[in-house]
Length: 251
Image 1 (cartoon, rainbow, N blue to C red):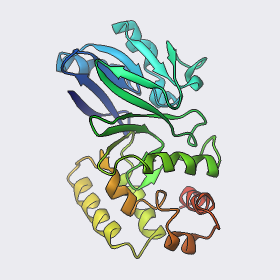
Image 2 (cartoon, rainbow, N blue to C red; image 1 turned 45 degrees about the vertical axis):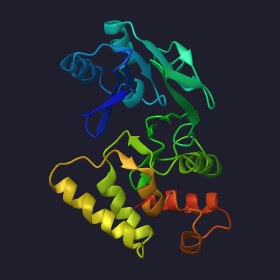
Image 3 (cartoon, rainbow, N blue to C red; image 1 turned 120 degrees about the vertical axis):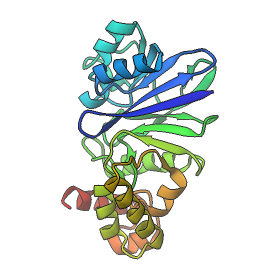
């Protein structure tokens, strides 16, 4: 059985420690703030044995060296980490990893960066998606191109709808403002946005988010919906996605 410990770090990141209660292994998903991760692990009485990076950005892999020095853990991630931050094992789409006896599938979710991956624990109903998708949003397209990014989002869309998506940042309130602009007639979105505003007013987290809800409300995951395609143009979903992403970049 896995226990996910979530905590805020840096300005708007979330840190995740995943603890296997059978093997007593502890996994760090990304390493935005080494001190915070080590302190949180110590407070829980856990020792970090593995790091799994989602992509190369410093607020996701910048703590690799310090955490490895403190714990001797093994670092796994996409090839793009190599040469930028310490890594012991490179993995890609379709491979399987283990935390204790619990398996996770590696999924290509490139687009934000060209090597971005996510980790899906099917038995636990959770996925750690980094900056590929957020509650009511998706990552900026720093390195990829629209067809590639849409294919990545399609892989996320194909996960079981009850999957909890653990995103890497608390961007939901600002994402909601754009989502309402992009899809103003969506009643489910309006209700979701009101709930988000109330949570943030109470300084509550909006992550994780359930995929089923995102499928109904997240404009980037709905780029294949006929109504969204009509509103935003494009003869194919990746073209509609490109229009949405460009609009969000300038919103």
